[in-house]
Image (cartoon, rainbow, N blue to C red; front, side):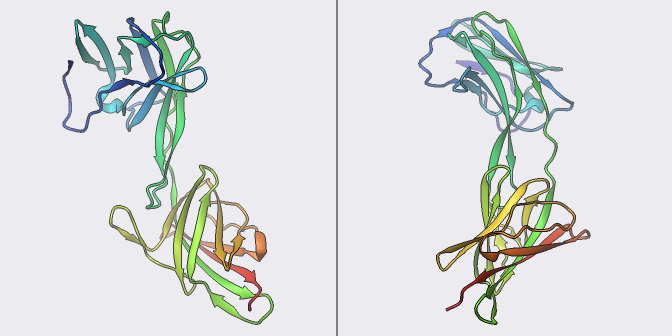
Length: 272
């Protein structure tokens, strides 16, 4: 039985769960104090108890500091109850895995906002290695990540025949690799012009949102050949797109009013 008093009408995930680590547990409390770099501390995070090699021993579901603050868990008989302490963040565990080396790692999930639902986790806090069976508490400094800055990007691509005087606006798929986080998105072109994108939330967009400061690479596959641009860093000023494989070249221009970067590219091919 779990007893808990909620403080807001929103989704809750009160679930400090043990992974199938094969470890027995010790009935002793451990206070995990999360110390944010600034307040108020908002958002959704994941706090995990890991062994020294990074394998997950336990996790506290989705932690929302603006609502949950410090959660103290106690077991009386067969009843597990939680109480909230305002003014600080973290949680107290009524039992710990029977291991001598562990660490607390706090993750924040960031999203591409490009419409495809892509996301990645960043470590925003990590404790030193400690012995959970003897330590009474552990402090974790949490660096709150800054908000991501996006640019709306339009892409226009055409193909050029290296053996004939022919320029043909491309119809097909262009892939955009985010090299910073290892995610790939794509757009459709028709007659060289980027087509509207139907996003996961039902909206329609004529651009793709890319992240300022991230490194990208554009590529397409035509007639079994992969054409790739050089790597470039997205910014809010025009930048040179390095020439890539198979003669893929591109230029960029930025419209400050609409916060839109336009990339005009072309690739050279041997036409039949």
